[in-house]
Image 1 (cartoon, rainbow, N blue to C red):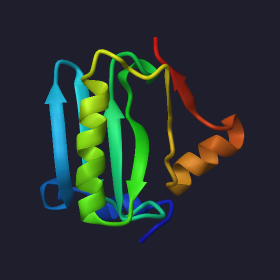
Image 2 (image 1 turned 90 degrees about the horizontal axis):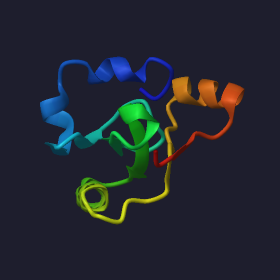
Image 3 (image 1 turned 45 degrees about the horizontal axis):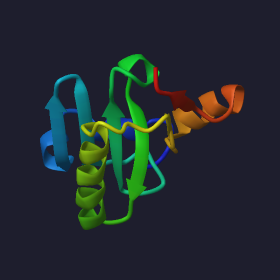
Length: 111
């Protein structure tokens, strides 16, 4: 159920949908099956140096295998000494698209 309320299908079942979760030293990377986006899997990150540590959706995937590879790539990137200078929020959920319609693309510079 993609759309404004597609996230309701994801309540209380994260363990079933989870592809991978990393949570250490203020870095959180979660990759899961989702129902509110244009592709079935997404990776979201939280890092204290981007967006004040608030969740950013960074990548979408068509398959669980691609999602697992993407998850590991984001963990490696965000735990390296060479952090990117910026991260783009690629969220395609309808709620985020409404926000972007008002504010434009969301790009978060490293703080």
